Length: 436
Image 1 (cartoon, rainbow, N blue to C red):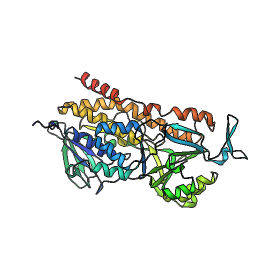
Image 2: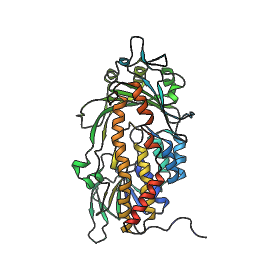
Image 3: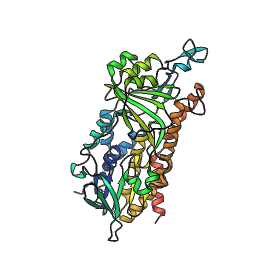
Image 4: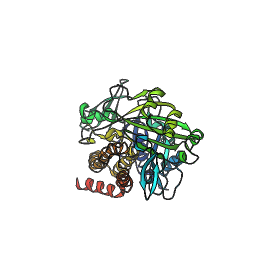
């Protein structure tokens, strides 16, 4: 009886980094019987941060990569079904926008007050929702054999093997080396592989002008603060120089809170710092009692400085062969809720191209096609996401004009959610074919 799996490839790959991007890519490549080793610098798999959201377009891509990835996502996802589906319900949270009677906008002869729903940002039909990063990572880990991964492997350098093969020799901090046909860098915003491809200066992340307080509230406590229904669906409170997001994670047992604020520079060498509750509350002293109560109830809040990458001139290098994927290629701010989704899209396109490859030469063609197709879309996200953060904080071209904001916010995610990646994949395959 013939085996259903394709024959192993003549090349072997190294994946650097075992976060959501690295694990998803490993699952994608193993499905095509591509030999690989995943190198993780930590002693075990782990994700920092709590909540991350995936929209319906990305969940469809998960299923194309492997139905088991989608099933793992659904086991830890939480989203209350609404018809039509809603991304966030938008409210004004900053009392400085309200008049003496608490009115922020008059619409159709009706007074809209602070904290009341102004409009919904529509989502798309289909399974979607927020997950706890660590819970989703646990589901992905189950899908790759333990023998695939090597831990405590901090990448220091990649050089070209001097045997004419063009292979990459990976050098690790523990003094060991490993030879592979090519390296795929999934090592996040502080990526070493990015430095090797672009140089230290160009690879450096830059402060976005935003920082965020992040924390969790037990769902029952959240229902006491807001209402029974509100914490179970995503909410966005907008204001001057900041906005506050709440959404359910961990199968609806926790409410994730991300509260954004603005500043020109970030001087601390650490990106995640502890904060006092009083300093945090001072940032929202002009906000509504509901928002202040949300901030007060956050368990163990910390501050995250939000960095992003400047546009990379390329995601790939020829010799030694290196390809950047996910946050190593295009780290973005979270204001469009699509950073992790872009990583999943990268995995789908790259793994599909590598599945077609039969030789080491094909690897280079696949990398170049991936770069040509993925770089414009993913770099657009970095730019648009930064603009979205300013929009929600009344710092964009519309200022605090709520009606102009509504028109913009209801449409600005269309290009992310409505893209047909099968068209992008066919375009990439055509580029490979044309390159001979």
